[in-house]
Length: 178
Image (tube, rainbow, N blue to C red; front, side, top):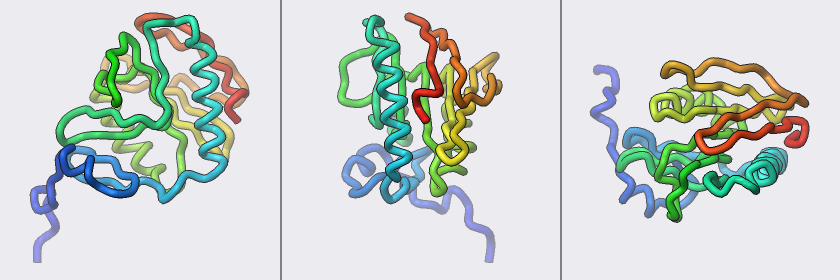
């Protein structure tokens, strides 16, 4: 008996995805179940990130922050970042343009996917900043895309980091999210 091959797995599209019940992401035609339900700590941190982003971007009419909105990358890939910032926004119910910033709040059930599969996906898609937030350790890792690859800018707990976007820039206060 041989090993299971990728081409042997069922392959799904966005048309399948939009009819599924529950919380899913679809990456390269393969469905990934999301955490059963985010914990209160996860939701508090994600909400705090959203508030901080909204506050810092209130005067930037070119950029919009989204809280858990589907990003439809292709017919075979749709993900739902915890928080995203898209600049040069086109009105839509979903994110259809590559975000400049994505925050993912780690949970035990999705940590491996966030650190590996989504890290590589966001890097390939050209997301300028990818921030992994560890609720248990109360720190965030900021990665910045440089020459097509993510470079760790640092780990932040109560520091300030300056995001330089295509349309604006702002200082993000990490102490406000934990």
